Length: 382
Image (cartoon, rainbow, N blue to C red):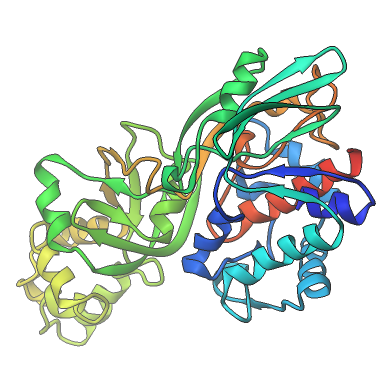
């Protein structure tokens, strides 16, 4: 986006791409469909030491700007899916990438593929960029340089800590990093129970004392995944417990009361079968008296059933790591950058945007909106 916008402004850029084709992470996003923005994006949808930092960037490039950009330059119309996620109507991520590659070509920008950037160093009159291309090493010199090399997920796509290493070398603060939007693992005595439910999906409210998400969870042979789990993972820290309401659209206490009024002939298991799969109900038998008839259900058991379903406690052992994470949490501190231009405060001509910065969006197109807006903000100042 930065190079494309610079081209539209009549500026000249050189894009150095490590892979043999551009936009690798765009191409795999949204299952290859690319949810390229979210209609409800606000600064509240981001994890950061200072999420308000985004206000200046988002003021320059809005959601409507993103929608118009892809319509005007690619003929791409968006279709809203779940929770404001906007996908191209073609359902092809490659169409999003094509918008950028065409703009680079049309505006005369240079794109070097299969180019490894080895270092960026400040010089008396700008920056020296050491690269390796076609088996040969060389050093490029420029007045301004943009670091947009992403974060640590996913290594097979060329992800690296290059931006973080460069920032640290220059003495810039880097907020501690960790995988985010990542599946969580369960080990120990509970592992077998979760594994027995592998493949089962449940709509749930997943929450802790900081945030709550109402989306699907997915049981796996190693723990938990699904949208709600990926979301809460950005707010989870090792050793913490979070809670799952497995029936957020109903009050089980009221359902039990209604069954009693009808005579209470059904068992707890039969009641739960109305809302969960047979496999899920059988698994819940580990915690609940599912064969007990509701008419004979005591207060203590009724309370335990309600608490188990509406406040199921989870203490993950860890996460699946960067190769399974959608994004990285943490990164170069926003205090190091000018809010409007994303230029490094202490290094004139050095700009940093995207995932390398301590700005991590929710699942569902938020990170793309940040990336597009960051690219535009930087391009204005090049």
